[in-house]
Image (cartoon, rainbow, N blue to C red):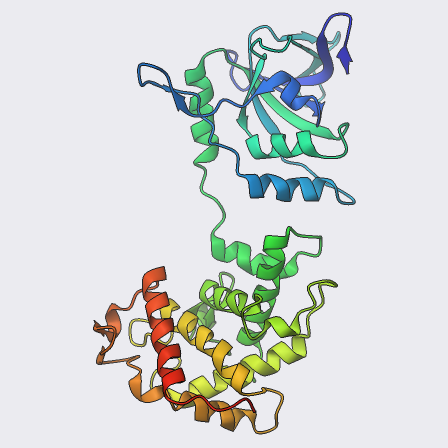
Length: 379
């Protein structure tokens, strides 16, 4: 706790000596105390144009997600905030030997508090968003792990900031694949991705699916990967788009309760994409280098067309498969998945790339062609 008589925060701590010049200190601060003792040094330039500081501006949406999690139940927050502390901070070791492992020394760390307007004794090297979220959380006494080192020099702080923040993150595809296995409450932006990833698993694993064995997953068996030709992130993104309020799969979600009619979604997906497979047999199941239907732009654009087609055809109808094939026949003569040129786009089949511009242009072309070919009244 903060000691009002001496204006400092004193905490039990462990001193870990990785290098004699800059030992590490492991201790805890409460959510409210972090910004009492530490500044967020943001990137800026002084009057001479020299770079000062090292932190990026806060990301509001990210901070709010963390706040929502912290205000939930059974909060587990193991990631430490990394601080650089000024040499005004003092560590006093306890009497007796080091801890039993011989690597750490127990003691007391004392961090001085300063009046408003004066420089604080600490700077956040890693954990800016987390620190801001903790300061806004309802539980101000929530204990937070801290890892700290002594460094008055901004150059040392910046060096550590760069090293911490240039560590290669987990591959996006691995995160996407792990999401279905998470059982704890997730931020809202990940809930939709989790549902889409679960559906992606179903499409890849169920032998009644037109995508069966065609989707590349990070953990897919190497032998199975020989036949997999569609990147999972592409399928997940297509599903996310359609599960949103403008997509045809949105009707199967109850956004209030969080429940989803998975059977209804499954029926819609298998009816439509089986019809795609039947309509373009020469393009289905081939690598993206040989068929743009397996490509990011192709899957995403055909997903946009799905949203239109399944407003014309009720996928729960017994004759829905035939009706969807009839709808796709309206655009089939204009598609160039494996050869030729998309005339209206003035692009060869293999120059379509998985970039927003091409995805948008291809989506618009397919929908425009479908609509002008005489869309069937809703059935």
